Image (cartoon, rainbow, N blue to C red; front, side, top):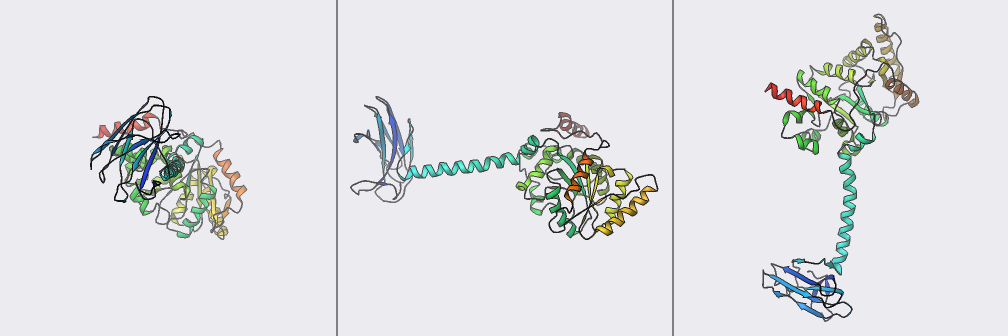
Length: 395
């Protein structure tokens, strides 16, 4: 009860009014409790012929006031709660065996609260659906697994690749790369990685071995962790969650952290299990040279696309021509592959159509290995139960 509530015509104070529809001979029971003042209420009606029909009994300070009233005829009746004599706002609790609808300012507030609640629900429901990963699992039938190879510790290249990926790779599939200090998950995300942030994390938090297998982020610290990498490439739930994280405001790249001694092993696994390999040959270092040589040695040119930042086309072309010539001497492809330059500032491809055609040819090539497709919803039971069984045997 507050000062801005309904006021009596004689100026004796304010009151709250609650509307109740009753039929002939229907019984109305109302209970009111308050701690700050002595509770009291009464019934007026029907509204067509307003008169005090019943008043409450009891109602000392800190007690409960009760009212029983049997309607003589059908109509709308008002349950009136007068404000305390102090004039200060006070709280009370009202319960009834019939629905009570607030009148006056309370009704307006109730309508506003209901509208606000509906708006929050409409906003939160799509967000909850999105964070579950259902859109990518139900609506994206065949996302590709794309391996992004790039020069390490090159800040300019990493900055450009984030924009390139969002424009040219993000909606073709799940892009994976090894993390470095310029292309990694932020410190806040690293800390949040150890908290259960969704239903999947919460369900397996108590079982640590399984929790690590479907953990939000992957850390390759020892050789045995390479099995987790192979498992992660089959875990569509996690690939989709990383892709959808932060409502698409991120670069949509899954960064895999690896120990310095194991990064080549990670690249081997990713090359074998990804449908497309995208190599940025801008400012190529020793690591990138090894990766390109591996592409030629494994004869993965059919699914590899080479990109370069604008301004570095000539140096990159010379590099690929030299590697292709060396590979040709051992019976591999001797022709240098095509280069696709992109803007270093915006990440846009200079010749977008040529890139799209070569990408389509890569994923549809008959030489693509027959890798098991990503499951639409969940992994096969053996993929989950097998690791648990093995862990128990080792114990």
